Amino acid sequence: MEQKRVYLDNSATTAVDMEVIKEMQSYFSGAYGNASSFHHFGRQSKSALDNARSKVALLLNASPEEIFFTGCGTESDNIAIFGILNAYGKKGHIITSKIEHHAVLYSCKHLEKSGYEVTYLDVDKDGVVSVEDFKKSVKDDTLLVTIMHANNEVGALQPIAEIAAELKKINEIRKDRVYFHTDAVQSAGKLRLDVKKLNVDLLAISGHKFNGPKGVGVLYVRGGTNISPITFGGHHEGGLRPGTENVACIVGLAKALELSNVNLEANNKTIFNLREKLKKGILDKIPEVTINGSGNKAVDNILNVSFNCIEGEALLLMLDMRGIAVSTGSACASGEDGPSHVLKAMGVDDVVAQGAIRFSFGHNNTQEEVDYTLEVLPKVVSGLRLMSPAWKQKKV
Image: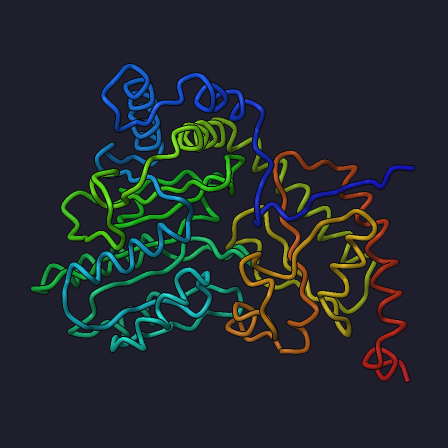
């Protein structure tokens, strides 16, 4: 009998929607010209590129001139952070949080070695930054604030608009502007992103998180922002991101973002119900589990659960053998030793954090898949606990 397969790792990546694939196809073999070429084939691609830029701008409530296509969310984050600081041409202070994606955290760690000062804001037990803590952290030489919109491990939503409002007051009395960047990779496709309501200067998203293709991202840069390129080699993307544009994937990203916005409420309702069904089933069927983060302050698609006295990696592998794909945290951190930096920042005990699993849903998931997961999961957890010295000691 063929192995049943259930994919519950949609925060790592999503399946490309068939409508998106259809939209992309002609740009691989038909209208395949270089968008920088002046002949017919080039003009075809340039027109598709311009249309995609306008579509993304409309969906983000931005202007087309403020939309720059990149290779992924990580590249967008790097261009934002290093591009702003390079434009300043002087060392200064950066504010971020302890729960950022490694695209931001590793960039900040690198900048510390280069002479920048970085403040890493704490979060509460739900993984949320305090606006008051942010206000207290601003210094005379603060140049950049970079705080994610939704966390990739627990889904925690950050008070981006509230921080931006405080930053606006600060910038009104300063000579040097403090720029605000947010990594919105995990919120794109789950929330309607409006850069004017969020009031950020820079925002990053990635196509493969909302049923678009891998290898393409977007960086929104507010008009008038002083930013420099960090790579060199051409005039593409307004000179900010040189290199031949990936037209097929850019068209796919724009279509995927459009579809996610059209179907947002229906998709979120489906996903929320699936997440809550799994959460209730886990709490009813499996003793000694901890739900990490609050679903009330998070995107709907992520459920992070710690199973006491077992290793998350062992549970992941055992579930995979039974056809269920999950994660122990961020896909970008899968090679790291030790407990999740996000859970540590939330105050989760190291031992509890080691047993954490992230279940993340997409609109293609079904009730039957949750039923199958709830059939398999308790047996796997029970089996692993029977082999766990820590569990045996608890039961003595």
